[in-house]
Image 1 (tube, rainbow, N blue to C red):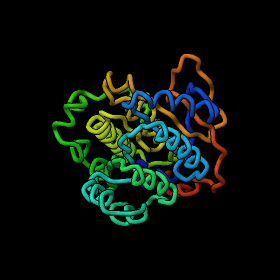
Image 2: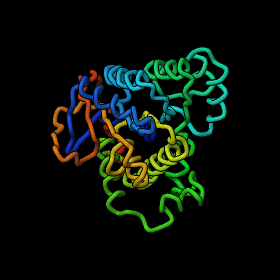
Image 3: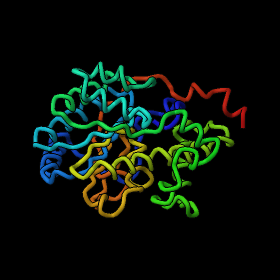
Length: 287
């Protein structure tokens, strides 16, 4: 989730050259890869689509059944709650307890409870992978350094002139995701916030993935071209697989594996109202 405005984007859209696979083939692919025991999976989601969550859960359970014991990194937990999360995973007997102790607002936690239950059952570590909304807003107002320290900025080359191509793609994605109705004055700040969250997720992976890791985050965060994968180093990328769960019927197939994701699992669209209605009559007037 980028900013709270992210809820207003047309959910689940993923575009580009993609490889579409049926779930049974994805299971076979994942089972073989998990045997390496240090694979990094970036698993996307349509935040409000229960069928997408269900299919992703099936894939995760299949991986865990293959003696794969990854760390599970979750966008849904904010980094400042890591100590609370660690304590909860040690002391709690069920997912409701973990969520009560370390979870925040803005998420439909029923979708994530089965993953937390699976981690508790297998004594897997869950780590908080996201910036809080407060930290993201600091970045919007004051830039990347408001939430990322100097060491992190240097580690990910953010102390150098920005990658204009990446920032332009992020700008386009954010504008389209908000129905092209965002005030021009906030777009750059929101791009910075998205980048800051992606970088923090990449840092979380780097510090926790020696024995394999599963990241749960929105499809936008796991994109290979501009998301978390972009910020991984070469060695990390060689053991990473990026899988989106998409409602988009216009996805195309790339035999070369180029594009935004390595695999796409197509899910039935979730019935929802027009997300652009939230902006009608407001943002355009504020430009």
